Length: 169
Image 1 (cartoon, rainbow, N blue to C red):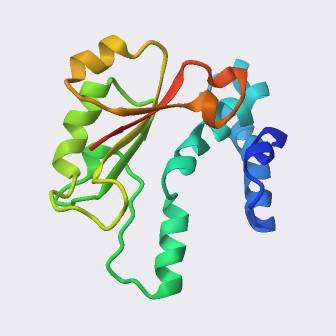
Image 2: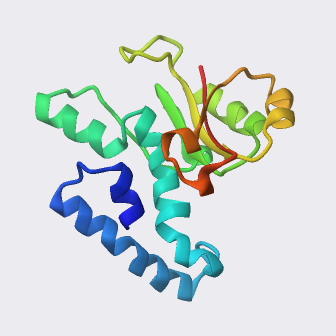
Image 3: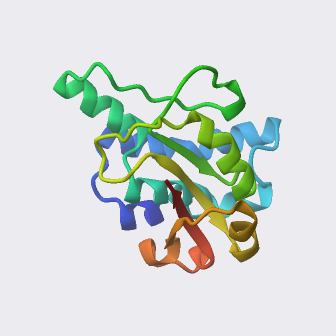
């Protein structure tokens, strides 16, 4: 948990309580079904929670979007956390993914879901995904030209070397 607080100091007490509860819940569920590698539980907050939060450093989280929209009375904002194959007849400004599939597949699945018209954000509509390793071949095969952020430059931790945040518009 300390590793998360090293990079995110603005959580509310309720959010801290929720984040603190995560490890116990994952340990409980891991005892029933293999959610994440049991050998990796000692690194739960670094490898899973902080890694996922890399997305929040470059874009808004769903909860933030929903709460801001509610606070200022926006009624035309929709967020959805689901599997791509479950989405029918919907369009989005951004599709977000973490460790799902090769980039060419992610882009193939995401493209039909993206609004064609430009949104009011600073970035054009697109796909944001977390990937790791040598991505040269994967990027080449995707025929995409993603903007790439090195996660270890966002979070100065050895674990994040060779982990990347990609954005394709």
